[in-house]
Image (cartoon, rainbow, N blue to C red; front, side, top):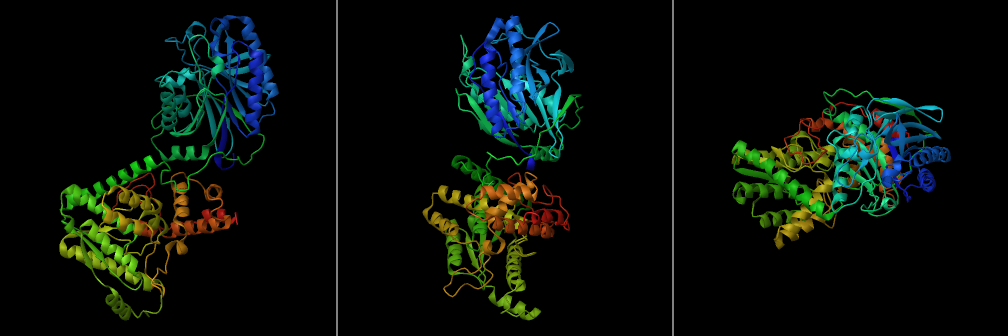
Length: 640
């Protein structure tokens, strides 16, 4: 379980009703297959050794005896599989019959988990045969061995990941007071469910939502293995709908009416981080007293991941979802700014318009805000401030954008003011150092602030979250504003927001300008252009690719991944695009800058939070400005 990844398998074997010998063979074959694939938790359906639909045959001693015989055979034949195996079997105890999950490891039966809720409605008649299980763990003597028997049992794997597995059976998840809730409160971060859920119109959708929402509510992984068409008999049909979820996300599910194995890689470390982060999880609840059965895996190996990670975790891959997300974010930004105007009574908006992506998005949001308020767009003052690095392309785009949006364009050439400032402080204009660059940025901010003061307006900030993460902003320059509308938007998402606006605005002039802005390299334009007038200073050449930095940022803050784990998934995700040494180089730079530059984030202007990752010191990121990055960087150095 290196890096906290655990491969799990939900298995639907092709069985024959009331034929434990045949079924045991099918179960063993599929367990061996799943074990060879690296699965460490293997879950099979409810009562799969006998078949769920045996009905009154469950009252026959012959069937029950044969099932127990085959259970021991399954345990022996799968002893070499280094996995915790859950298999369904009817077990008699104290003259009552129970629908149970037998838990196997290393050729032994570790425990029996009985079903808590026994359905006797609709097509279900389990109450005719089975008794409900008790939370109090008891012992069952079987084959000369005492085996724990009860619903409230956790299987605990020692180690840094702290895996805890709880089990429930089919109907248990459909009830108001689920056993899985008790298991989670007792510490279970993986819940398995052995099920025989028949198929009806619409039931698959409800079942998927049930598993997904249960995993979210419990901050857990949920492995659901259901019976397949081998159970179909008389008036019911089974489809083998297997599901694996993690904290509200379906990682994998089977196609309907199939048998076979579904795999997924669960991130135990991430689940534990989520529980630490959400302080309301189990707050005020008494911890249920579960029997804890320890187990361990024979060796710790690096899981070969079936799981993939999106290159742009802030941007949905699906076009429909992405468009919906863009509309929602623009609305959040605009409504946040709207409230600021309603509260302050300000009439004017002042924006530094460079012709780049960030200031373009800020202008579009401000236009939307003024439209919502019924204010004239002419009260938006778009200020272009050409200086040493301004190119014709960005200047022209700023002018065209202001015209297309119907806002007032103001031009303030800051060259003379900056040169005078350099003269005043003794800066050589031919020395293109940090003072040369930041002097321009601070002059622009001074111009914007003073225009806003003169007109009674607010300066709208344009910097995005990725720049804030890296500290790629001039302190008290573009770092400062009166409301930063882009503060919660990462760079990789800014591009999609502008593209969405271009696609939906219905104005060809505006669309054309926006498309050219999208095609322009990201640059602060603080150094003189090339001899042919092209941008000479490209941000990503200096600070690194934003798609990598946004990837690092998301998995560091949202998932709590350590640097080596981020490096591992980044090398897999960007294979063929970036060499491993390039990824490592930029990840080191990310951590250095993220820690060293936090003092800039400590005094950020207000800005709307739009997603689950945010950097405001008043909200999500309470971080000391002078924290040392040593332990993070040392881990990366070990990868060199």
